[in-house]
Image (tube, rainbow, N blue to C red; front, side, top):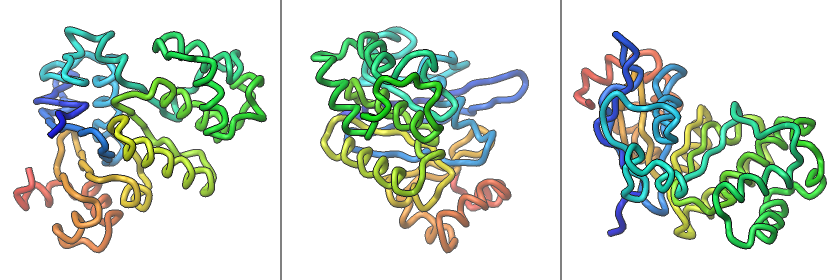
Length: 251
């Protein structure tokens, strides 16, 4: 059995006196897409920022490909990449320039060829030499995901990756991400508020509330295990009544 591409152990981030992330542990395996779900303020983005090395944990350990990011930050993060609608690429650079700069940062081999492949893969040919700042939000999202997959990462972190895409493009992106995981290139940690999307894409989900992981399981069967009709209904319960789930003994 292959080791996890991401291992999170007893992770905490405390902003005195409150913990934004409170002693969570989980992993992401190769070929696996894991959904990190929960209402706004649950601790999802704080968790991702710690995995990316942007925030330092108060306690706990994060390993990417077996490398502790506190001890081997550069080496560990070379195996990862990230995309989010709130983290657009530099707007004064063209699509090609952005991909080239980030490709150099990640040491991508045969970079010109890889850029051409990515531009075609994400339908960016009409905008290749336009500055990314003038692109629509959907076009910028596609560019961000192209950047995130440019170095064929072992760990792909996606925070609301399809939020600004039309249904057709969102469906295409979901297909490409499933293909990315299925080909054995790496694992994916994905946040989304679209429960239909999560059920379609994710192999496993983690529900967070108030910094803790309350539930974990298969998105197709987890609602029935907790007497809910759908993943959306379960999400609403996590958002509104997390204590009722704690009372079930799920922690």
